[in-house]
Image 1 (cartoon, rainbow, N blue to C red):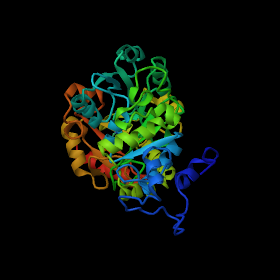
Image 2 (cartoon, helix red, strand yellow):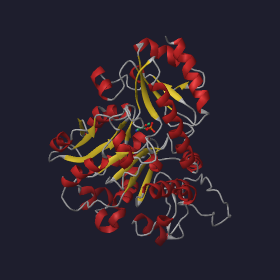
Image 3 (cartoon, rainbow, N blue to C red):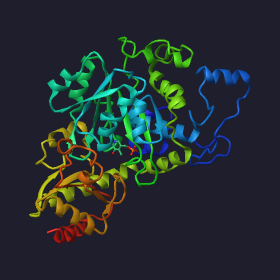
Image 4 (tube, rainbow, N blue to C red):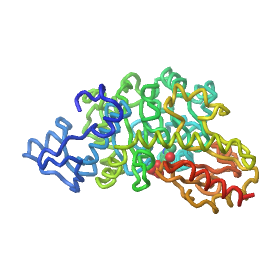
Length: 429
Ligand SMILES: *Cc1c(COP(=O)(O)O)cnc(C)c1O
């Protein structure tokens, strides 16, 4: 797609990155189920290994099916390149890997996916990295948390599960002033609802497991680079701006310009960490992404209707959906996610913890699962599941208090979803 910029989202979600297979004419992107690729000759092989020519060597690094998906997501996000990974959590490590080092830290929002809080507060310590968690509504606190050893700022566009929208332009301004890249997890919003790069983000990460695939079939992740960050402006990013010992002294930024981050992620990140997406997984996600805009429109429409209805229900204490005028984040919808506030929200029940358990156990259409962003409607009691590893204080900060359930609204008929919630709420009394 040469003029990708001029085509609309609905066209790009189907066509970006893909052309009919040059050998067979296959119109759908084939699943290239091959580990290795024959070199034309020894010179071709040497050029590929020197990154002087782009091509396929070995599927831990790149694979033609996965490459179509990477280009499609990069195009939809308005980035210059992307690297697909085995899961959303893998994508987060892959995003931080070229930037961080022992003793370095990432300044992260307190309102993140529960698994990310655990990954950042515990597991990354094994690499000598740390995360400093800050309330991203407190801009002064974000700026104050940034120190000499900070290498990135991390937040979610629409944060799961508390109905929170990050003021991305404001946070991007802070990161920019400090010469740091802003990484935005755009999983809950998708590029259809939110474009973090347009709002100032450097990198965008995804769990493609969720809306991009859309039907709960495969795990995957992706890191998209805007290509806009100047890695050589300071000495903070030596893996990109100085000779990289892990790749025979190549200076990635000098050699590859705006593609430095993407090539580093493939040539070193995937090569040595091996968190690779497989071609079958990429195939499922490519199938899903073709209908992303249609699904997101219905997800948002259903979520808006159910959130408004639940908010008026006497059995309900509160609904946190940024699409509702009652939400403190409603005024950020127009700038951050103008096509809608997503389809995740939490409901606090007057009956507390016990009512939440009875509600999830009595629903018939909604499934009680630890997932989100599926075509089918899902519910989970976060405090006893996904956010179980957190302290009660962390749970409350993350919007996952014990009396709260999180809903991921699917694309079924909204009246059926309403009836299902109504009967289960009655039983939860
Ligand atoms: C699910 C999710 C992740 C983790 O992705 P996996 O594919 O499960 O590893 C990260 N961030 C957000 C917002 C998510 O919803």
